Image (cartoon, helix red, strand yellow):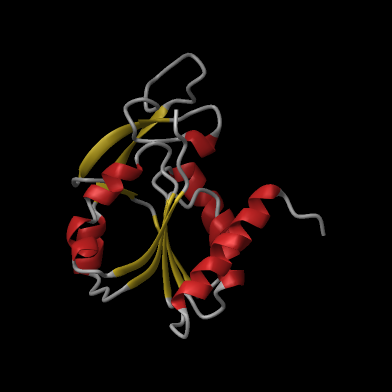
Amino acid sequence: KIQSNDDREFGRHCAEIRRRAGNHQIKLVVDVGASIGGTVRRYLSEFEHAQIIAFEPVQGTFTELASNVGGCNRVCRINLALGATQGVVELYHQPDHAMNSLSPAINTGHPDCGGSEMVTVTTLDRIVKDNDIEHIDVLKLDTEHFELEVIRGADQTLREHRVSFVYAEVTFD
């Protein structure tokens, strides 16, 4: 099998988490911006005992996520966005579903836009509290320029040291 640069980079990322975790077993991964489940499948493979909570707010993409990982009892799929505050916002579909974002720089209607939908936004702090989550081993963020807003909504969780590792896919423009 030929591995892409992304596969090798992800493998290095997971190896570094295992190295730093030492004897601590990775039990919970929260994947924010799970898209169609590519990283969910990778985490399932890399951390064989981990439960994955996968957040994907766009209904069509969420349906693909469910199709790709829905049969796995280690994955909890949640059709919500995470951000700094709770609410409902309009999300404009981008030509490439991987670029859907709540970031004001990206979330605009344009001629190539595939329509829009209303999405519910909550905070990681609310999810942690409502579900009695004691600890998140890996918090993965891929929200297309909305990562800082997700972090703001995880303020208490992070201050209480309930997250061991944060993996953010970011682009610096």
